Image (cartoon, rainbow, N blue to C red):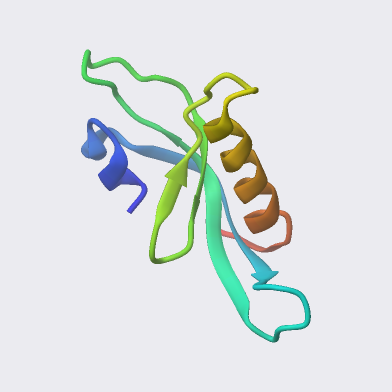
Length: 93
């Protein structure tokens, strides 16, 4: 899912992968597992863009696009990443 959102999915390189678990809402027993890490891939010009954080939960994946820290989108990603990736339960790679 992460690679599918890239300009050149076949060029994707992953690192610092781990599985994280968090509870969905206070007082619930529903735990959600997320795959977190960093991905680097080629852009449309053929050059690698550098590693970016990502989070994927099996239904959807989000990649940090390194937008302006004050943008709504960047703040939303930072909040999502903090909530989804703060409780590492297993390193994957």
